Image (cartoon, rainbow, N blue to C red; front, side, top):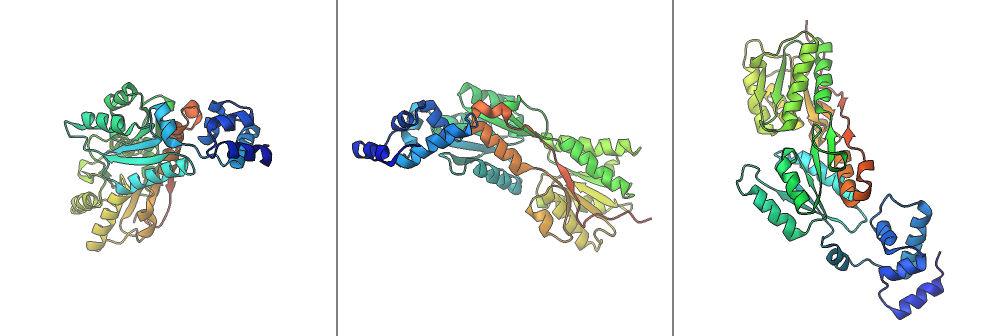
Length: 348
């Protein structure tokens, strides 16, 4: 612990204490002080407390501009996405902000059009212009090895978020979508449902492929065959779920249950059921995926697979701001089924 007199002498000599002052008085290296400032896990608690005490006594405030100039990087975390699911993107932002709260880091969000022929060049310019400390790449962009290579070539740390294994643990957070959906569909089967509709996600999304695979695996495990007439495709929006439900529910032998690949589309399914006078869950059971706010707020409350999006985003951000401990952060996050009021046993 540094005495107030020592701190006062430094303040009189230099009205703006430097990181060198902190390191000297704490008896540690500048790198150790930097790790304390950035909340690195590579410190024992006694060292952390000693350095923090010196910082508090001196009133030291890190100069982000000077440090950014030395690192040739700004203290900015970039979030790159082309995802139509606004609730998912919001959940990711909340997780990142939780990780960087009370630090020097700030968040910059960059939506892009993955179909644009200029996407890679635009992202190159964005990363170079902003001098990003690191980027979190959301699906489906995260599935691009070329984009990951671009980040590596520019010396920009990156973490890819996905529904399957995409990279090494230091550059990855992943979920078990296939297994989670299989368990959700098996729950419907155990409730006596045999005609189970499925609203798939958009083509080209790995999450959509993994969730459809889980649906098919659950049917196969129960000795059931998928019926193409009971399958429709959406794009993770309410409107696409609405359109898919109209397609599925117009048949004479309509499904008694529908699994939608995200909550937005599940809400669209529920809306169509209301319009058609189909009681949920008495006549139609519905399950979604994500467990976003809409799932608990619609009526009946939606049974859904909880995707630990905030936890994934928080871990990804910590991998970016503390790269020296990235491999120690969790990379695999398990989803679980949240049972609410939108599922009931099938009618006999």
